[in-house]
Structure formats: structure tokens, C-alpha cells
Image (cartoon, rainbow, N blue to C red; front, side, top):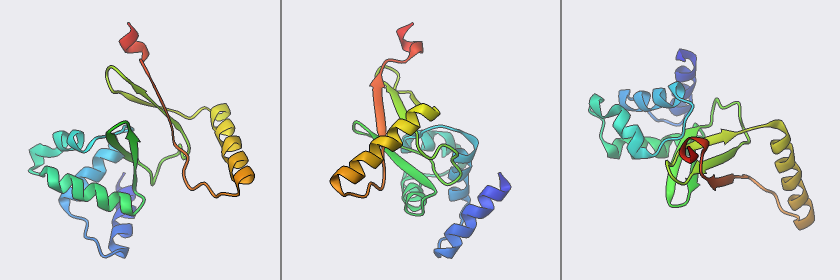
Length: 145
């Protein structure tokens, strides 16, 4: 994890942004958890370190702007997940309508189908797709009982 933090610090430094202890604490959450976070959830995890919600929002914007994290919008909610070191570059999100849990699916066959769909749309409509997001909504196994 130390090397990843150093890499992120280098990216920030190249853009004249200082790695503060608050930013480092937020980055460590993303590095230690393979999860999607709302800003309020990040705040709950670090508020004991005397880091305010406004600092969380500012840090999210900085990390997003430099492609360290990415935003996933599901309904009215915005979630954030680590992008820089992610091995699942393209994946599908599933959100449970009852508990709001988010699961990632990156099975090869599904991803190949998404790539085929993207390539087809680009060719047929002469467009360049920069991002492809698929969000499935339903009820997870845990909530179905």
C-alpha cells in the first residue's frame, strides 16, 4: 500500500497539490476497501480523525479530477470507487433496491458482450464512446431471504 500512496502523492505533486494527512486518510480508505462509498460514508469512517465533511467533498473532487477515483451515479446517489489501481477496468454494477448494497460483476463473457456492444454502436453511429456504465437494479440474495 505504501507504494500506491507514493504513486498517488506523485500524481498530486505533479499537479501542485499537496498530500495532506486528511487526503492520505481518505485515500487509505479506498486502498483498504474494495467498495463504493458515498461521501457521507467516507466521513463516518474518518470523522474520529477530525476531518470534516467539506474536506471529504473537496478531496473527492481532487481525486476524481486526477483519475484516482471514479464516480458512479445510481439514481440520485453518487458513489466513488478506486480507479487508478483497479484491475476491473470495465465492470457492471448491481444495486440492491432494499439495502443499497452495490456489487461489481466482471465476468469475462459479460464484459466481452459489452465490448461488442460498444464497438457496434461506435461503428454504426460513427461515435467514440469514452465511458460505458451499466447499472442493474434489483434485490440481492441477502434481502430476498
